[in-house]
Amino acid sequence: MSDVATAEARALAARARLTGTVEALQSELAPEKLARVALAEVSDGGARAAQASIDAARRNPAAVAGAGAVALAVLNRKRIAGLLRRLRGKP
Image 1 (cartoon, rainbow, N blue to C red):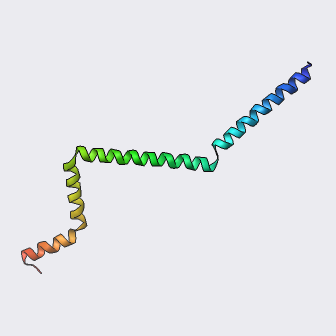
Image 2 (cartoon, rainbow, N blue to C red; image 1 turned 120 degrees about the vertical axis):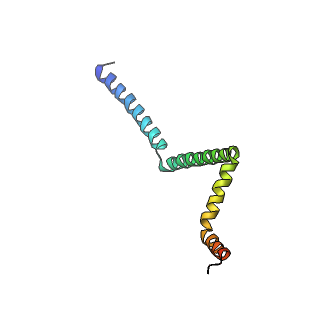
Image 3 (cartoon, rainbow, N blue to C red; image 1 turned 180 degrees about the vertical axis):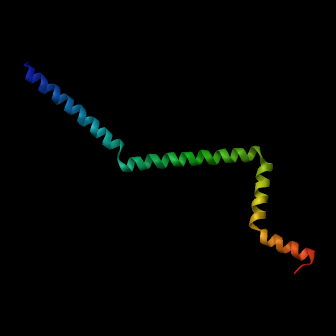
């Protein structure tokens, strides 16, 4: 085999490898696939965060009850203030 034929064969093999690499990259970087992977990762992360929150709440029920009471008081502060005014006799 001459040097030219050897070089052409090597170039052809390199071109075939490059084409395979480009095709693999195109399939890996397809927008649909990237969106599916991102959605799966976000879903998994959300599920792990929710489970960690539930576990923390089970370990610290008093803290959860306290936080709930504070949240209810903040949301109902006007009603509570009105009730306290009526109890004191002020209009």
